[in-house]
Image (cartoon, rainbow, N blue to C red; front, side, top):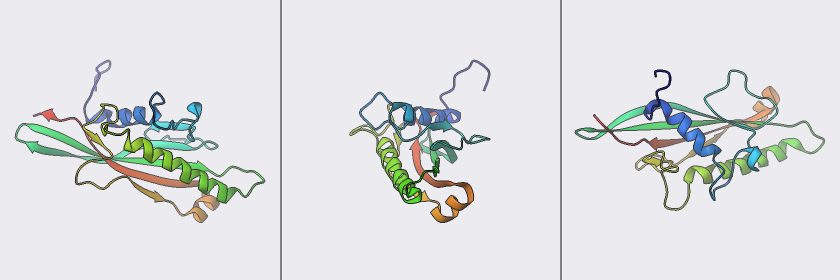
Length: 171
């Protein structure tokens, strides 16, 4: 992409979805800690050096398919992958159990935001459909093994995957 040229193509899907997840101006749950949510970091793409002491959510994608529903129309469909790292804080409380419950609660808020408000499945008009793509699985949450991840990295891990139909393009 040339410097100074804005794009609304497939190269911006991750940043558009990140903006939706960071939004705190609607009736849906806020996800950023600065706005009362559970995540200290919500960032497009994986960080080379992830933070260590705050819950983190990284927005990535595993790929996309260039759907061709009509002879001169294209509808890119993206698989979004949210990578969650939830640090197990060093406190005197029964931290492993409390942190697993806190992660569950954070994911519940995340799923509410992915589902979006009643009647709007476009994530504020950014997409044709997000998290509700016809003939695709709904958001899928996978938890990493708590015992192994707490021992190895002092953090719990989870991934959330779902599909986004981008706006149709003329071809």
